[in-house]
Image 1 (spheres, helix red, strand yellow):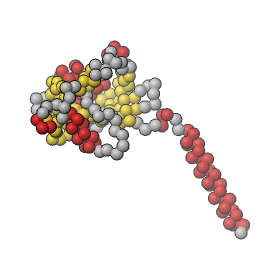
Image 2 (image 1 turned 90 degrees about the vertical axis):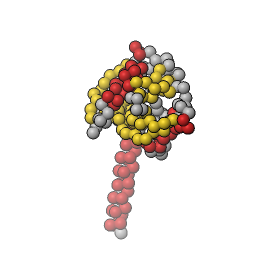
Image 3 (image 1 turned 60 degrees about the vertical axis):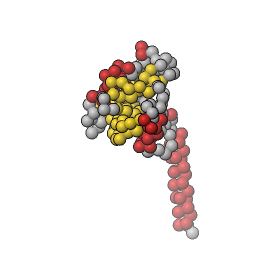
Image 4 (image 1 turned 30 degrees about the horizontal axis):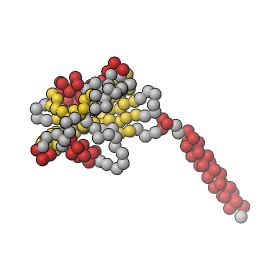
Length: 196
């Protein structure tokens, strides 16, 4: 009987310790413990060495297309299929161009930005692009057109050094509508490096 009381007492102490540790862990979590946001970008290229950009009417600027953040259960290939369909294009292959991190100094959020390179094959039903907001640019012109420093640098690395899968970390904020490049705060936190 005494042994059972000791075991019960020890079990109670272990449960109390476990609850105490978990309670402290829950209380110790802050906004900094939040999940990072995955925000893929899609570089569509064609045989003429052009890349497809999309015009953001709010910011009055061209940028690399995206369908927004990945929310819920979806694979990258499904994400790319949906993006291509919305553009009105079909593609043959895709590859990872790079994986980049954007850190915002005044927020506890981090964007993880995979950049995928998609090989254009044809327009859906031979009708052309689904929206006039999409436009083809030469590689060089696209880099000049993109007003966001990190994105412009990323696109240049991926398009002109395509055998490398790139990584890097940036701090970029201060966007305005429309975009005023002079107000964008930008810093390279971790310079480009090879992932492959």
